[in-house]
Figure 1: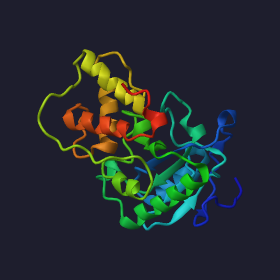
Figure 2 (figure 1 turned 30 degrees about the horizontal axis):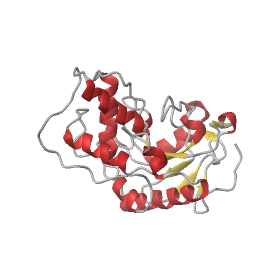
Figure 3 (figure 1 turned 120 degrees about the vertical axis):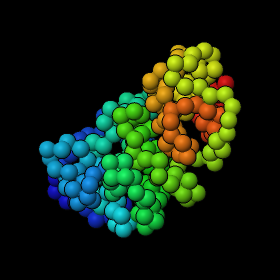
Length: 258
């Protein structure tokens, strides 16, 4: 693909050939954040620009805060893969993907530099303003593809983004003792937990059985909203944090909550 004018005025352009039309005339109403998960930043950038990779993102954010745009926002970048949120299964057609240079779990999950996070915030603020994206639709790859993906990881500072008006977040409840649910449990309390996860947006089965998928969705939720312990066990801290997140949603999103 030839060069294009960036949608974000502070971005340089390095075009990727890996993109297509958004399905059914969809426009972006989500932002999906990723880490690159590769050994070096340059290798990740090269891979996103390589035709044979069949992957891409709209934006790439370097550790020092530099931003590159690789795909025009009007186009469908190939970043989310097989993903679901609130019943929608073509996340690529309705999202803008941002790759954040970080080796991730394979590289020991290093901290994200302050300059990089500030750049991500500024970029997201601009995208949100131009597209009218709701806070609760700024998500991690692990939210829309639990089990399969774990990025941007439990060190990503979602609370910093939320304080700047990017994303939906509440202070997680402290980890204490008490009753919890885990793989193999079943019954109405498990079904109620699944219903809350599904109401928030996860593709959780509501069948009253704490299955592998439920465990994976709980872990994905913890990785974003209760990062102190990511174990897939629905303890009081996890359930209370989920409940307060639902309560904090705008009325049109939470009016059907039980």
